[in-house]
Structures are given as structure tokens and as C-alpha cells.
Image (cartoon, rainbow, N blue to C red):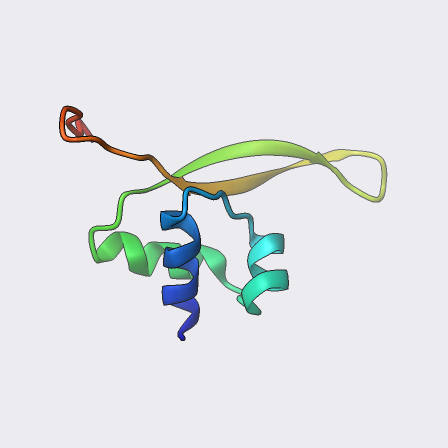
Amino acid sequence: MSQESEVLAWLEGGRTLTAAEAYRRFGTLRLAARVADLRAKGKPIRTRYKSVQVKTGGTAKVAVYYMEERNEHQQSYD
């Protein structure tokens, strides 16, 4: 299974994914590139950001990727 298909299956399962998680689970070093490839293929992957504590005591923002579940009554206005 390719990294792209692993990432897609994970997100389609209703789970979120960060770059660190993608590296641990799938060995993906460039999650943003895989997400860009999937978006180019029409996959509705969304991004939100969360603050995380870093070793030096500060904080950093990391991207959290996810797919929203759509039902037959929802429309996309993106």
C-alpha cells in the first residue's frame, strides 16, 4: 500500500493526522505533500491548527488534517 493510500484510508476512517503521527504510523516524512496530492485528486481534506508544547518550553502550531463526514443533505460551499 502506498503512503498516499494509507493516509487516505486513515482520514476516511474519521481520524485526524499530524505530521508526527504520519511518520510514526506510515513512515511519511512529507505529509503536507501527500495531502496536496490527495486534494489535487478531489479529496475534501481539511486542515486545522493546534498548539503543542515543545521541548524548549515554548509552543508551536502544527497542522491537523481531517475529512468531514458529509451526508446526502449537506452541500459544500468551498
